[in-house]
Image (cartoon, rainbow, N blue to C red; front, side, top):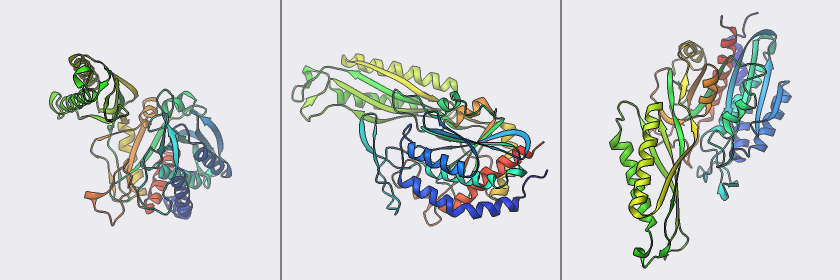
Length: 412
């Protein structure tokens, strides 16, 4: 039994493109935060069932797994998309822009698909449509993984790839290899990746400080939390820029939130700061954790406060299997001829796709989605309130998914 021809895949991808655009716009206008993707999951399950694909719902809380068994026995390949949006206020001005608000960690926040997960879901539904239409010609099984909470579950909750794996997303049937595609601000239709380490590992940083409250006019009678916060930020930036060799292994320490106080004339008792750490090696990660703990504790001691730092929600480095990375280049060339780069730069972003790739061989790929009329220098990047993509690249994403699945199952 021969695998479906490239021409047949291309024609099917072109035919489903209007649906992919419609799915994306619908999901974009109705975004949901991590572990809250109820509407999105229902849409996915409905579309997969309509294609005759076996569906498991409620995997990893709100995740959906679809299983498409081909007409001939063979290996099992998985394709993964993430579903969650971010607490970002959309400023794109799109006719289908989000106006949604939701609750996140006790606060009411605006919600936006600022990282392209709406497009990931739409493209994987498109690939499922293409592959379901070729079911009898598929030599094996395709598993479609639609995952919640890639950006991390709310504090105190479990979620994301870790919970999907625990709930059996890679089992029944047992997956042999996994592929993922992530859209970004790169040149349109470009597919890029690199073997071995690609995306950084990440940890959520939470710093808590207990001081002594006082009147804003009498700072000497308490502990000045603003000064504590400033010193911690300066020390954190100094660690990342001056204490470790960034030429040996890149690393990033970012403090992104500072929460303290309620009035302009009260210095508060409590301070909470949060941020993120990105590294590419276990040794660098352990070194930065030790340096941060020593520095934060010492600053607290200097002011007479109790300061602590915790590192949670760890994501490992996204590691692309070397043999699979070498093999997949030819397959990707069919999806986007002349626009495949297999030596992409390291990415300091992180992805919990890495957890699937720890269990089975995997390759994670970036798809360029920059609109042609937007200069490279000013293109809004992922997590920007202005993030948007060229919808024409969805066809390339659908083909990449479909070709990777078909070619993997057909290869000897």
